[in-house]
Length: 315
Image 1 (spheres, helix red, strand yellow):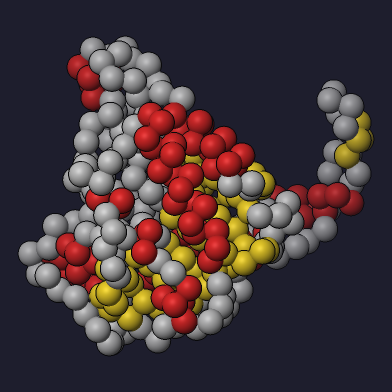
Image 2 (cartoon, helix red, strand yellow):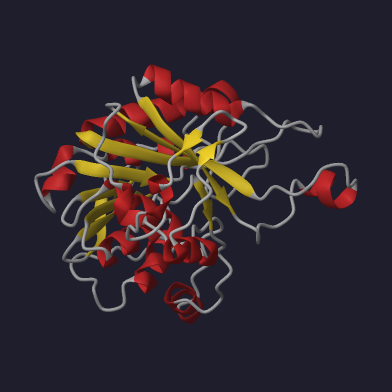
């Protein structure tokens, strides 16, 4: 397995760079230990937010497994990481869709992955989220673009799990602006209360109380279409290839805000271009990221401007 999946290699971690709030380690997730946390603080993480390599049928530069190998690997990774998570902390993990080879049939491997880490790691599924990306390229190309017998995929699942059914969380930290219709409703203070066809009885006061905003849904909408971010400008100026699967900052920001407080620790064991670390830095959280690919680490420095200090691995 180690021959074709780089995250299985036993490589001791070095500090690639650090800021006042965080550390980016160069090395395998399997080598992460409590001493690495003590380089920054002696606390455990309140949130593990990550997007591990997907179980894709077509091999990617950043590596991927399939079938039982993928499930076993993911369970091992999660079990290893849970020792660094607080008892009331959360694990938020994105696992993308997968397709069976050679036929227009979706694989159930992502769902099997959820069940495997939930059951074998003794975790609770707090909620399932969908990340909708309208700008996602059409795929799978053979069935969508060539033979035109499927439609393009535009979402992936994000699962929120924890050691307890009651992890630290507060949806008041991620309230959204009221819609125009809701603003009008609150202004007029008139609502069609009463019993609905569903037999639910709606009390007028249920919807006419003014809060600081509306409670968001579990469908997160964000696209990664920017072409002139600090990260991209830095990579271009330093001839560093862009990470092929970057996540927009709005996704980790949502979970970091809802599931942590200022000063808490956020861990991303598959840091990539380190969107998670950059968002945590901006929100005054402590953070640790790990990554085996030094090109991704070097490119991620563009997210931190002049905040980086300390050891820096460059080759």
